[in-house]
Amino acid sequence: MNFIFNSNISDQLKAIAEKVALGKRISEVEGLFLFEKADLGYLAVLANHVRERLHGKKTFFNRNFHIEPTNICIYNCKFCSYVRKIGQEGAWEYNLDQIEDLVHKHKSAQPTEVHIVGGVHPKRDLHYYGEMIQRIKAILPEIHVKGFTAVELEFMIKKARLSLREGLLKLKEYGLDSIPGGGAEIFAPEIRVQVCDEKSTAEKWLEIHETAHSVGLPSNATILYGHIENYAHRIDHIARLRQLQDKTGGFNTFIPLKYRNQNNSLSEIGEVSLLEDLRNFAVSRIFLDNIPHLKAYWPMLGKEKAQLSLSFGVDDIDGTIDDSTKIYSMAGVEDLKPQMTTNQLVELIKSAGFEAVERDTLYNVIKIY
Image 1 (spheres, rainbow, N blue to C red):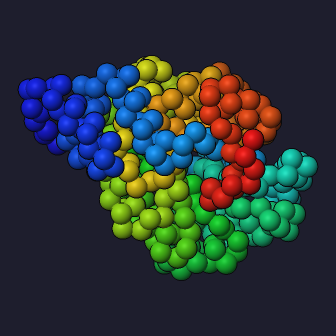
Image 2: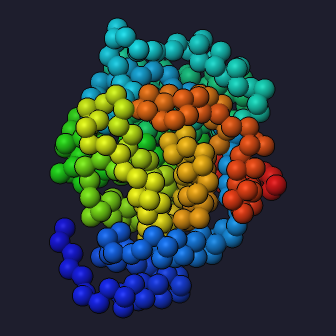
């Protein structure tokens, strides 16, 4: 991927700004130029122009909790602090009765969404997870089930000996409502082979999401950034997402996920700075003109940093979480028990100068504060 830039940087920045102001799409070359040459303040102005055109001052959150059925996984991704093998210290695998207990624990908070992701367990197939969905909805009939990364889906559907389309339709029949964006990591094959060589290819991830969209299952999209990739790899990644969104329109939100370096095989490379996080949010918002929402996942960034991201194109900070996820706490984030009340989320948003909006998973407005 060899891009050549015009020597006149200020003229190029002006030309890009004019395109963004007119709502025109920028190219991959221009996206890379923004990553490499644009000042952070300039990016903030452009990203917020896009954000305000789409959403004004509205900033979204929801009442949600996570279920992580197991951290036992057949894969060994180098960036992962979460994975364990059967019988290894720190491993867990909840049975369906224990899943029901978890759901009952969160019922009083009146959540609108449950987010289900975990390891790729070698012994569990689509029908096991289908029964899990049914049990959850027996307790919370109105809950939106957003479940299973593309990597989990590929394995559980194959294990059930169904085609991809058949498997997704069967999960929808069980009660699955949408799928999250995890497992995308970084699409560039030369990087993917170094950080998650055993995992599904980029092409398979995109195929699974495209098929999900075709059967009426919307999804989210992610990138894992801040490890051994460079800016060109990031642009390639989000360009592929933009291309698929042009085709299907099925992505609700894009969630950049920061690599955290504790307790994994890449720990020696360190982590990128907050300024780099903000640059990544801003360029993503400017470039992804067809994905409506940009989320800063606050358990990953921390509350204050997520609040700051709202001035760099972000319009969603996820939800209440209710201390129900271990994926980032095991990787060294500051907040080891991620949990915020609705009132705390509203205050976080309002104190940054934005309008707090409670949403459902599909961004239907529940309440404006």
